[in-house]
Every structure is written in structure tokens, then in C-alpha cells.
Length: 231
Image 1 (tube, helix red, strand yellow):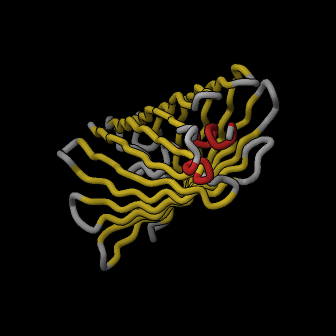
Image 2: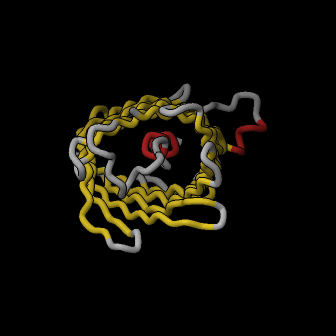
Image 3: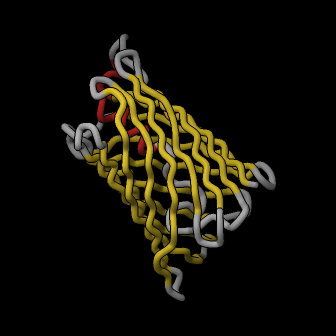
């Protein structure tokens, strides 16, 4: 259960529009406020099942044409366990080609606090690959975002890799399919399926509704709602 809740802290931000390998345009900012709630499928049949909640904020800003800086922070847990996590990061493109492939490197520094480990410093290097394409159903993108979350005080490392496929069939709608993969200390590997739809509400606002289902190492099911702001 503890690993599943910590995984929410890592997975909650997945599938942001044009995130990962694409730098944010210079002078522009993206904000996301999201909430995820999950529970184990086996406990849904019992009268005392617990809901795991995680509320987060994600922000990134195009500092230059290539350098993107940002913040990822949130708090969550259930009746028996809680976690607070956050880090700041910088992302920079390192390779691209004329066919649309691109790769970016990222480094993050932050804190995570939970029981029994207490407060720990984090160093989070990452690497992202992205590819934009056109199809008969509209424009789309594919991406892989991989990172290692090293906890300095305990020496533990949490690994994660999100595989995302996105499609924009109309001007107002986006469809996102994501496989979230994680390997956390003292836990089995986790694989989650996280499909979502995104609706454009105005020039600067989108709302995202998603579902979450554990496939490997996790029997949780749940949902996500998020608001995206761009300016």
C-alpha cells in the first residue's frame, strides 16, 4: 500500500500537453492542478475500504528558447499513511532530427517526507523522448519519460518510466493513453493503465478527466481530474 501511494506522487503529473521532450516556449507558463483518488479492487467489496488521495500542482516556464524550468509538488495518503513530496527541475533538449524525433535531459532537486523514512532529499535525473506525427484522426504525439528518484538519506532509488500516446482528433478534444511503470524500494514492479480525455474550455484552459487501473503489482482502480492553464 505504501508503494502504491508513493507511486501516485510520481504518476499524478503524467501526460501533460507538450511536456517531456518538448521545451516550453520562451516566456510562456503552464500550470496544472490535479487530484487523483484510487482504491484497491479487492477492498471495494469490504465495508472499511480506504481511498488513497493525492493532490498536486505542476508548473513549468520557458526561461529561454530551450531551457524549461518547473515545479512538481503534492500531498496525499490514506487513513494510515501520508506523503508530502516536491521538487524543482530544469529540462534542456539534447537531440532532434528533421523527422520529428527529439530527446531532452532533465535534472530535479527536492524533498519527500513520509513514515517511516521521515524527510529525505531527492535528486531526480531524467531523460525524455518525444515524436510528433499526423494521422487520419488528427495530429498526435508519442513519448517516453524515464527518471530515477534517488533519496539521499536512505540511499534508495525509485525508478519510473511513462509511455504516452496522445491524439487530437478535433480542435477542442485530446485523447491520451498512458502506461505508467515504476519500481520502488521494497516493492514489486508497478504497471498502471491511465487513459484520459482533455477538453479545451477557452484560449488558456483545459480540463482533463482520466481513469487509473493497476495491471501489475497493484490492484488499485480510480480516477483523476485536472485543470490545465497556459499563459
